[in-house]
Amino acid sequence: MNIVVCVKYVPDAQADRTFNASDNTTDRANVDGLLSELDEYAVEEALKIVEAGEGEVTVVTVGPDQASDAIKKALQMGADKGVHVNDDAIHGSDAIATSLVLAEAIKKIGMPDLVVTGMASTDGTMGVVPTMLAERLGVPAVTFASELTVSGSGVSVRRDGDAASVTIEASVPCLVSVTDQINEPRYPSFKGIMAAKKKPVEQWTLADLGLDASQVGLANAWTAVQSFEARPPRAVGTIVKDEGDGGAKLAGFLSERKFI
Amino acid sequence: MAEVLVLVDHVDGTCRKTTSELLTIARRLGEPSAVFVGAGYDTAAPTLAAFGAEKVYRADSDALTAYLVVPQAELLAQLVERVQPAAVLIASSAEGKEVAARLAVKVGSGLITDAVDVQSDGNGGVVTTQTAFAGGYTVRATVTKGVPVIAVKPNSAPPEQVSGAAAVEAVDYTPSALAQGARIAASTPRARTGRPELTEAAIVVSGGRGTGGDFSKVEAFADSLGAAVGASRAAVDAGWYPHTSQVGQTGKQVSPQLYVACGISGAIQHRAGMQTSKTIVAINKDDEAPIFELVDFGVVGDLFAVLPAATDAVQASKG
Ligand SMILES: Cc1cc2nc3c(=O)[nH]c(=O)nc-3n(C[C@H](O)[C@H](O)[C@H](O)COP(=O)(O)OP(=O)(O)OC[C@H]3O[C@@H](n4cnc5c(N)ncnc54)[C@H](O)[C@@H]3O)c2cc1C
Ligand SMILES: Cc1cc2nc3c(=O)[nH]c(=O)nc-3n(C[C@H](O)[C@H](O)[C@H](O)COP(=O)(O)OP(=O)(O)OC[C@H]3O[C@@H](n4cnc5c(N)ncnc54)[C@H](O)[C@@H]3O)c2cc1C
Image (cartoon, rainbow over all chains, first blue to last red):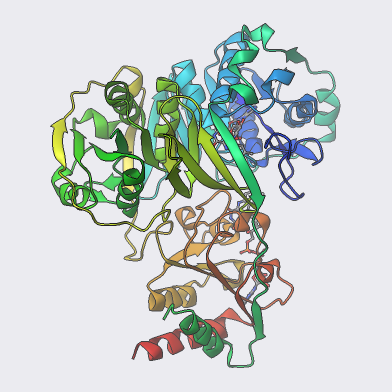
């Protein structure tokens, strides 16, 4: 089974993430970036499937120069090859445009049996690119998989919904997005790190995908961020040490604030 | 006035609170039209009328319940092309966002998710408010192309009752082959706890690793306040509480009036799910736990001592 995994390069959540004041886009230059943590689960799941059977794992990212780090990490984990779509015109793209670029890249790679993605990125956190991608590729999507089983002609997924835990079956080709419940992503081994250096990474521009700059980027986004502001820091609260009266003091606070 | 389509969020006809919130928001933008998909219409009808739906588009073929998201998106796309609404409002749940994503691509519209406020811009457009970067920023955004498709979080507007005509129109819909590509093969309903739903609750009391697996004190305190119970990922990973109760980046994002964190350290991924709560309270035995940076009120102490005492005090005050 051939698998394409979509991996996103994101600013580190542990750093002070912010926006560019000039155009209201995410600041990706002044904050260290890395492979979105939640995409590690997607890479791991793809590797497990291929290791248990056969086929190849290709990882694809859409992002600036530094996004090659995301590909590198996935290759070190064990993916076979990478595709980096990098074009200045893509800066500031919204989810709609990102899904368009990813879809065209996947078509150029050659439609795999399975496309695997993370449940959401750790920066935009919309969780909609996978579904948009499936819509564009004309395949079913099964999102938020907490368990994935592959059989000859399809996949079976456990998804833990609010009202019920459901088993969903879909035929391949299809797209599956995975949660952080599905597996424990491996750390790259020394051997993996060395091997990754020799793995092929393709560099594609919009032109390589037959796309035009007018279809992507900030100026052509179908949504626009008008303004952003840091949330005011929370007012410093009252902290008491429990001396046997902590519960009563807590109840006192709640009644003062009219919760009881 | 243009119609505003609201996808009814319901379980077998019992409307979630978001439905009345979305209908309330829809009135700011135009005339609310509810789109009801699935079984149980008779149960839902009075709620839709009571919160101002002028029209109700109704589709309840079996195809709409056996398959996932795609039928709802196809049906909405059909309606969008026909009525050219001012906007489409959908609950920003996992499923709602998927419907919204497919719909946006189908009809060529910009999409905004996780909106916590939606207002008219006065010129027929829509301005939304979202939070970004684990609640650290507030962002205002607009949709600049197509019919705005907006996924709105629970608790984004106090529902206002206004009676609507709720004129029903049955919609003909035949699912495409793609709509049948993924199907629900089995379903194990979750046991009902009798507590409010996490994302809708006014008060949430959560437990973490500090509970050591004993959630009884957390639950008792929650019940004294009529609250929902949440959990940190450490508690979920340990198997102490179901994943559907997890609060945080990869769990639920909640924004209640009051959030009480018990035995939770306050990691960034947990904060991402609760930082926008109006009032935050924590009980933790470590006075240096990062959660205390967020609190309005904190108790440094053992949750097994503090919670039962607080529960008793709450019960006593109720008389
Ligand atoms: C604070 C903020 C608010 C935003 N608001 C909006 C908005 O309202 N509307 C809008 O359309 N856009 C918005 N954007 C832009 C949007 O986040 C980006 O366009 C992004 O490319 C797609 O969305 P996401 O990061 O939320 O991805 P998600 O949908 O959360 O991503 C899920 C999965 O898709 C895959 N994936 C996503 N992006 C890539 C990529 N570049 N390369 C490879 N794989 C990828 C990964 O597998 C990932 O795990 C916003 C961005 C930020 C930072
Ligand atoms: C990709 C990814 C996604 C994640 N998503 C989430 C998410 O959605 N939600 C989430 O919560 N986490 C998430 N995490 C995990 C997160 O980083 C933390 O590990 C987790 O939140 C810790 O849970 P905790 O606070 O319960 O445990 P700990 O950090 O171990 O904290 C336990 C706290 O309990 C206190 N304590 C112990 N005993 C008592 C007692 N008797 N009385 C009072 N206090 C006591 C301790 O002082 C300590 O502060 C994610 C991590 C990753 C890598």
